Length: 100
Image: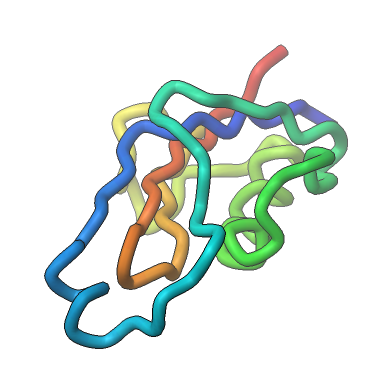
């Protein structure tokens, strides 16, 4: 199986939506652009957000098996995917790519 690098490429912060709809929370997502983790054998990296992992799990597993080419040529690199977490207030976009 291949390893898959997970890199934060963008993090949005919709303060207007937070003010309008969200209850105040003490701890929000603390990832920063440029942070990365490596999934070994398709497993969740230690310390990685469980909710973000749920969204990307099938893509990581497929890339780890050597697959890719999602949606018939969606990505320039067929052994990668751009996946966003499902937080509507502060979504994070992750680049998934196989590494040797």
